[in-house]
Length: 554
Image (cartoon, rainbow, N blue to C red; front, top):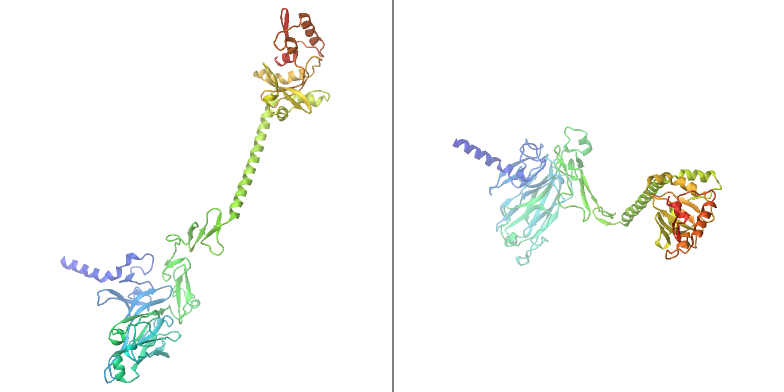
């Protein structure tokens, strides 16, 4: 049992560098079951640890260093990081050096040669530079291609007049010099072919014991005088940039062979290599991940973290991109689709539309209400026998009776203003008004008996035919309301009731006069009037109700 536990522990120790940071990286980045990283370095496909996890030519080793950490190696070159989108990798390269003794004889030296012939890798001439450190030494770098053809050389020679001239600072020729690499493509072989003192050995030995040559990234470099006067740089490394690509054909040719075409993700594109031949795969715009794997390119949710849209714009993500939208009254700027600006047209347009719709709605409502009122008025008109009167008016041109609308009556009485009231009665209120340029009396009746409503039209037809010099003539009526209204000729001198009773309701008219009034009002009419007694006699005087009131109270 103890032996089994020991074996398990050993296995876990062996695979631990491969899973150190696997949990920190999401998405498809390696082949199924393959390590995602080695130490702190992420290993994306086509790279991989071992031949089963890598595309041919991209196999890496994951080994322990003297410090006990795990580091990926491409052959014997340390890999610092890998970029899929750029098709580049940063690597560590050792510093080449050559040291001398008093007799100008090389005591120790180390020259590093790199040969990537037949591999997907080559030196990046744009991002790297040659630097030489020392006094009165010459560093020369020979370059070749995959066929070992000589492409040229690059180098420089730093000078020193005395140790007093050495200062910490930039690499500007004194104690340190630098040279660019020729812009030639497909540099897969390089070596420091010559590095020697070119002045009197005693002078060189007094200045410095060693000279150094470095191929390194073209970044800011700070020179320390201790690099020249000591052996501090021996055994050190510098970082450099190398390019890599897939195959040795262009995208057009590679895409014609689907089985070997390396861009496997649906949302990927092919790019011809800018340094030599071959091609690279990238995720399409709006996607990220590994284009060399099925489903490797995933949509970027630009709105998830820090929104690219400036407040108050709102971010909306969609597959392959995003868009910004603005709140009401604002629109995206023409020169910046991520920012909003005030747009009066968007404000005024909808406002005008709302106003127009409001007026339209009010108009529709008014028409609806008018139709509704018209239906109600038509209903009242029919209930009060208006059809009989209308037929009579239409058939008899000499019929002196008119039907007035509700609007005409309201206009004549100024909406039944109390100032126009001229009398009250048991069956309604009388208003003074003006209709058709004629002063009239308008009585607003009180009818509660449904039977009287139905007979009202017939009664009006009878009353309209009465012609008597002592009876106020009825001119018409309004039947479009719940309780009909009557229109009479206006008598400015008061009523018969007021003449009989006076202001204090004390009659001074004799009985014979009352009888004469009763006789004349009944027998001078055409046609004759027969009705309930209209007078109440109280000796020695009598009270007489005006015939108009009698008829309207029936």
